[in-house]
Length: 314
Image 1: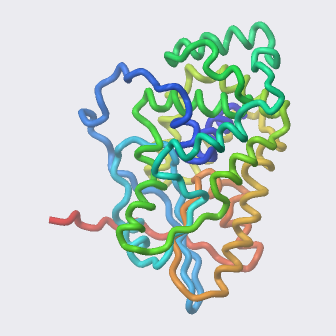
Image 2: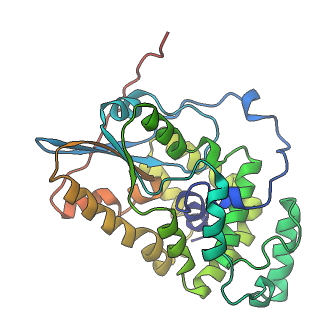
């Protein structure tokens, strides 16, 4: 499940947490993103509605480059909404996250990460940190889950992909500009507790596989980002399933359990009138255990919103 693990690191970690807490990435060797034409993205959007309630369901790619996406049917749905709901609201000041990182990402027993890894794994970690321009002991006191996700996020930054361009920040700023409320399904602290509570062996497995794949991150992320940009949910799911070594425990932990909770939230919210723009990681809106399928089991239908080009403002 190697590709899915990278997807989990980028599409499920609280947006901005890893990238903003990890060592600064060196400048990309390629041309700056502003010099490279970026395609207009048309990501997938669904809607659940009854007589007096409408909930738009948008799948995000938490770490993104500067490609345009907040237009067409996504912007139309947002403009029609009277409230926004995210997985977690990210503080505008990254420093506000530091106490939570200390509380949940540092090893509570004060162990060195190197003591949890074999000599070969420590060597691989050292090579990876060197590649990322980080000192050898950069993550020595952190738990494996945080190290795996931080390294992946920093590697993504080197590609020009970061939380700075993530949809959550764009949506939050747009909502505040309209003075409409922004709330959260889980919250940053809840999500950090989730990862902190991951069994240690599962954390170490994630770290080992992330180390194995770090030099392949471009080959992994680019097809995923292209599928997201095209709104091709089936292709995105196929990319995430390319490896046959699927880990049911990790899927249950990071995807299925949360999807069930969110489907219940949507069902409850349908009892109150209003128009809601709900944005969650795109990984939650693919596969058999997607939020849409779980809603169907509850008697609610999530319909795909057709793509309609809208003219750019003059």
